[in-house]
Length: 389
Image (tube, rainbow, N blue to C red; front, side, top):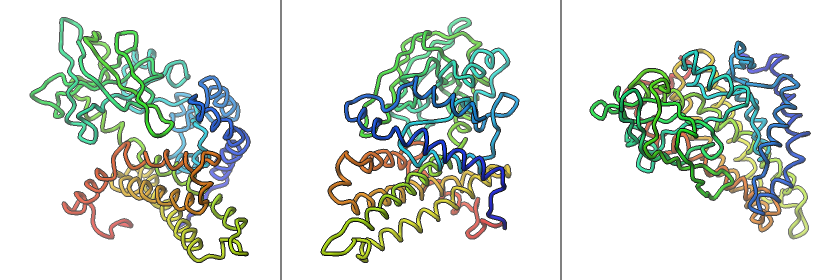
């Protein structure tokens, strides 16, 4: 087995690390100041400026196929880049990307939605979660009723990432109640100016999702994405598109946090000696170091399976579950090592504390990941010890 990166892979990884250090980390104090004042940490104009800086060096559409102007990087390489971005809490993402299911659009839809989204001229959001349908996506109640050549959509979606900023959404609605998720759910491309509205949802973190309200929103037949009744399969492809990227991001956050803990432990003195000499502190640092390395290989293995065209859902569930749990344990230890200062907003630890807590909930809760993992093992879909074949 060769665990080394190629020269090209190392150069790409190192460029992103440098970009994070030079362009993003210097903004951290201002981001914290703005957030304490109830303002966005970074404006849309500032994000666009940063994305253009990255684009000048070729970093645009990290996973977007090359035929659409992207880099077309592998899953493993994308995971490595996501870990680098995780080293800072400045909310940045590379431009030039679009939701994977938009590539199933017809040619007219690609011109109207896919291409402008990749170019950064349009903003989308994925709307399936509802007040009564979170982990159980099959329980959605939003309906689309045929009326002449149009469809009329009614219902509410909740916790929609990017829903407040999007100018169009991919909304999933029941078009055949008898079939439900088995051929009765359809995905529609719905522009905001067709009538839906969004409402901001305040959370314990800096992430502000939206509730989307559809009240007799009329859309023409041509707005169907994919095939009538086949929306649930599209939704599952979106949800499973890259679950490994969430714990990948957490790797970078945990590495940065552990580095802060090590520096503090070596400089903070109690009773005439650095707290780094206290066994209690040493064990917290040791456990965190081991868990970060374990998480790294779980994430990379899941990404490798994606690149090999394998069914990576089990490996991604393992990485997501472990990453969410251990990231929360690590940030808690780092806050404890910093004592009272860790609890203040003078340091970003409490902000990471709130941000990483979300990792155990969104895009599949811990409980859902356990259910998936247990089901695969109990039904024999995955063999114990069968990781290497």
